Image 1: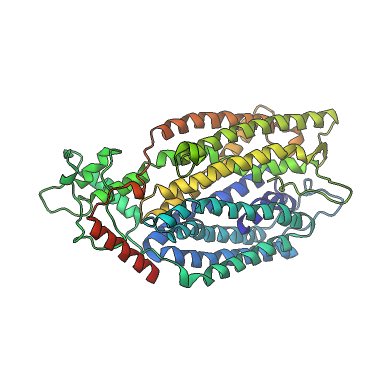
Image 2 (image 1 turned 180 degrees about the vertical axis):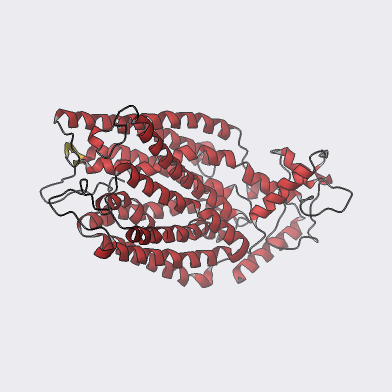
Amino acid sequence: MSYYGIAVNLVSYLTRELHQGTVKSSNNVTNWAGTSWLTPLLGAYVADTYLGRYWTFMISSVIYFAGMCLLTLVVSLPSLRPPSCGKDVSYLDCDKRASSFQLGIFYCALYMIAIGIGGTKPNISTFGADQFDDYEPKERAHKLTLFNWWMFALFFGTLFTNTFLVYIQDNVGWGLGYGVPTLGLLVAIIMFAIGTPTYRHKPKGESPFTKMAKVLVASVRNWNVEVPVDSKELYELTLVDNPSPEKFRIHRSSSLRFLDKAAVKIKEPASQWRLCTVTQVEQTKQMVKMIPVLCATFITSTFFPQTQTLFIKQGTTLDRSMGPHFEIPPASLVIRKYTKNPRGITMLQRIGIGIVLHIITIVIASFVERRRLGVARDHDIVRKGQIVPLSIFTLLPQFALMGIASCFVEVAKLEFFYDQAPEGMKSLGAAYAAISLGVGYFLSSSILSTIANVTKKNGHGGWIQNDLNVSHLDYYYVFLAVLSFVNLVFFLIVAQNFDYNAEVNESEPTFEKEDNSKFTQKNRILQDHD
């Protein structure tokens, strides 16, 4: 609720209160949102290496809350925003700009929130998953539904934002509109803290980046070494050498075989940058083999920003009345039995379905925009601020389909990157999902700027102008649809060649059953004690 309480209507604040144009305001939104989705990479690193997920989340929540308080103060005080041009002048025609100080403190608050998000997003979901033991069948079954409930809670908060909060921001005031989610965030932090005595805590380990770097370096240094066929000839620690309860073995896999060179035993004494265990090599493989999937979600993630920028701008040009005294805010429109799979269909299949729905959505958006422009021309509406006599409910199909597509993609993406990441790198796995959105936002900003600049050459006005009634968003949406179709082909190739990790309950234990039972029991006792 706190994040989307800002994100879904930020473009409206930038245009109405800070008097920014369409391209500039849209890019500022996507740049901030992109940063908010990239900082989780740092948060995951800090959690996995230094502070653990619990304390990383708690400290980041305090920073998050401080940023929300500052932002609420900024939008509430008239001295911290540019003066109004008066009731008779539309914000579209107002030439009074914010001072450097006003912009500085506003963006300081926004990027404090982005830093706070960096420590909360990759750690709270993974911390929730840590509460379930993969070696207990009942707990494992519950964990399979965790991310579905997780996204339900997320979208429930978003629904509250897109209805109640957006209406408050548009019709009552920005101070109250940002004050409510700030208070909600404080309540959430307190609720989380109350549960502290009952939480399980997984111990910290070596930095996942350092682990992977060692494997990559060792593979290069052992490039001319022949890899034995028998996996038993590769280097691995025994239970006596490796008594730590949070560590366990991973069997050698057939993927990315060149990395196996890092585990080939050599005669001379070797450092950890020359010789790595099979488990460490397999952990690196599991993270590396997800990178093509991650890249295939970048273009898909460029669709999500459209609901917070251009879709909203479209809504501001339409008739939003519903009865004589109510106006809808423009941001408010936001199988197991047969497959024998515990999740119904695989995670990559769900992502693929979401990508197809994204393409359908953006094609529909193009047709809707073409119709909107046709009505505008028929009524000779060519000036900024004029309302097109077309109901805002015309945008309902594209918002609804985008929401359905996002449910498929985002839930499966978060579950996939967490599930396929090895133990000790779960926060980094969750950060992959955030990175996907972060890169998507920056790509969206770059594509928007590039298209706007290229299409206005040779005296043309361009596809995307401050006045949407003389723009061509329909062309822009067609371009996105074509780009997404090419990306779909790439995703299908990647998904077809991806090998899922073995399920815990399907894997054969590495140690003797008695030792493994003691190992698991000891691990659980330590987690409960921590």
